[in-house]
Length: 75
Image (cartoon, rainbow, N blue to C red):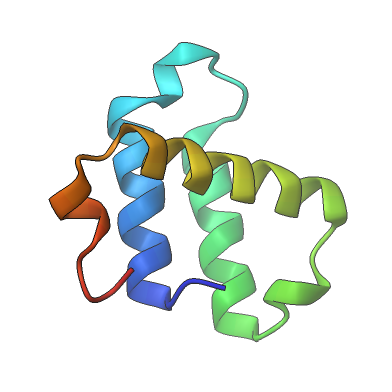
């Protein structure tokens, strides 16, 4: 799992640069669910479908980042 900071960076990058591709989720709700899961410590106990969307977003974010940005220490 990415660190909290890394996860935030990846999601915000995806929200900014790639979410327009398919508008699959309500970004504000997803961001709240992400924060809630992190704060409660049950991130890995989340719904499998939610985790699939989460990993899809961070994978898409990494695919569209330039190499220097993707290699930052927090990722």
